Length: 139
Image (cartoon, helix red, strand yellow):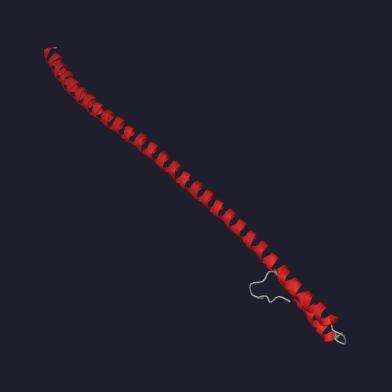
């Protein structure tokens, strides 16, 4: 029977080793010991459970990796959405600021036009008052 390293052996190698040990123990005359048989069956059962645990751990690792990937994608999408919203609000703020600047320029021009018109009307009023007095004095 070949020696195996239990730390490096695969599940199937360990099962083969235990089965060979069980067969060897049962081949010797007078060695139909129930304790030996029970021990080897317990070892095989332990190996089967260990194999299932390893498979389950691999499945769990794959599920965790998949969940991490989906979470990363979701966070990237959320970040992209926030950045897009920030860009849209920045563009909107820039547009509104430009509109307000133009409106302020128009108001400034309109104020100067009104000031000029008020000055012209003031001068016209003075001229009218002067000519009205002249006409009143002539009459």
